Amino acid sequence: MTKAMSIAAKTKQIVKKHGGDKSGMIAVLQDIQEAFNYLPKEALKTAAKAMNVPFSRVYEAATFYTAFSLKPRGKNVVKICMGTACHVRGAAVLQDKFERTLGIKPGETTKDKKFSLETVNCVGACALGPVVVINADYHGQVTMKKIDKIIDNINKEGA
Ligand code: FES
Image (cartoon, protein in one colour):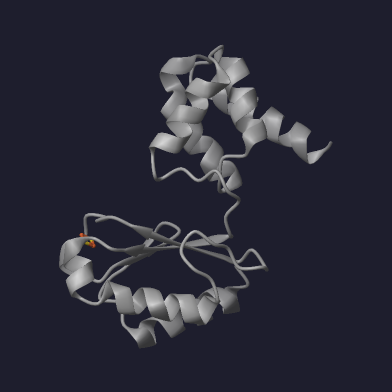
């Protein structure tokens, strides 16, 4: 089975799970992103066809929400909160540290596809600021030391 076929097959399965029409479009996009870690164009095309809507409509929804990514992302997505509460607690310094440690800027992915770096707006955990979300895990009161530890742990797990 080619990669394109497997993307299409998985996408069709996801569309079916959400009722097979456009009413489940956002849930479909969320599941596609969960399956592939981003929204492959092939999946968007397949989903549009399966939901019987124009590709432009699906593409519009995919680009409207910042939570969706149209570019392939690394296995571990690091999101640095840049909301006001985190910003005043040094989020920019943390961003700089992540950039130097990983060798990438926000919006980029490391060559080994292990990490992607992103900046996001308030993730709703201001009291814990500065906050960094890695995949589904929230890390609060993040310090430079903590960043080294977090990255070391991920590398050790071979994740
Ligand atoms: S500003 Fe970072 S969690 Fe609210």
